[in-house]
Length: 65
Image (tube, rainbow, N blue to C red):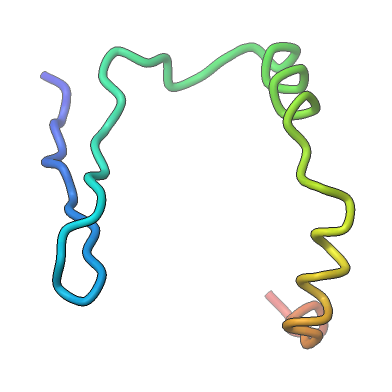
C-alpha cells in the first residue's frame, strides 16, 4: 500500500497562501534519455548563477565530505 502524505499548508504571517500536495499517480522514475530531454529543455536563466554568487559568494567547496 503506497504511503499517502497529507497536504502541507504554506502560510505568510499566519495566513494560508498555498497548499502543497503530492502528485498522485506520477511515475517516480524515468529513462535517462527522457530525464535529460526534460531537464535540458527547462534550464535556469544563465544569469542566475551570477546573481546567486553575488548574493552568497561563500561556498562550502573546500569542506571535506
